[in-house]
Image (cartoon, rainbow, N blue to C red):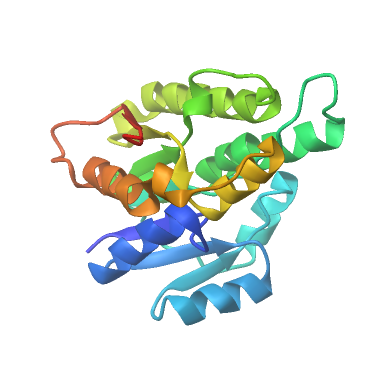
Length: 229
């Protein structure tokens, strides 16, 4: 049984991954943005531990985690939380840029920094659930894609830096997935939302677990998964 710290466990892909690991009897630590969300997650995932830290405010993560119990070793750190706000570069405000960069890039970097000692002890695994936008940027996706391109760079650098410590690093690039975030994207695009067109969060969860379950003599570095539609 492994010990896993998960962001974004409350919905979408993060929820699907958390459910799968809970079914396997793994030890789960779930990051929540506030105490109310922590109580909600604890109720939905009995036996899981919660940690409170707001990814929208990366400067305070160190202080917040320093005042809470944390696992002594960590088999995986799963970065799944994310936010998206579409808009043309000529329209996006600094507030929208800063929010997406904070949640999607700076906080994953800071949380990884804070948890590296526990990951090194366990020779653990860091998984970044990125996006197809981490490989290309389309119109109106500039800020979000910038945060996800940065997340790819973070993962690539971390992989080189921690390979000598036995820490594995994987980036998963999902295409469009039937999640609450996808509902918001369709609203911003002005399109009708049909979840049947897109792959399920469970399909992406399977790719994450595939990377985690790979024998220790190998590492999946990058894995793209796309809907068939």
